[in-house]
Amino acid sequence: MNYNDIIGSMGVGLILLAYFFNTFSIITKEGILFFCMNIIGAGLACYASLLINYVPFILLEGVWCMVSVAGVIKLLLKRN
Image 1 (cartoon, rainbow, N blue to C red):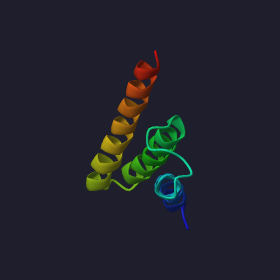
Image 2 (image 1 turned 60 degrees about the horizontal axis):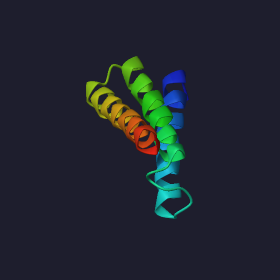
Image 3 (image 1 turned 135 degrees about the horizontal axis):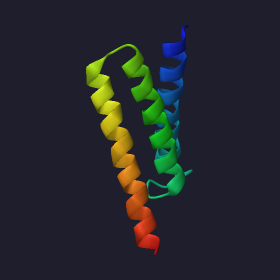
Image 4 (image 1 turned 120 degrees about the vertical axis):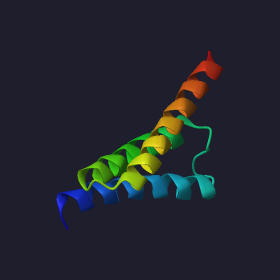
């Protein structure tokens, strides 16, 4: 397993873990932890996709990360 695979696997693993936790009501989809796990996971997966120059997943993971950041911003604004 090379560097790209390790980074990509960590990112995808984190996204899947967030999905698993949400599905089994361990965390909520409106919670900061869910968004942070998706931001970090998508960021790592996007970086791995950049390293191998695979544009479809660069776009997918980049958008996933940005949507998660928007979710955190919305959550923080709602709390204030």
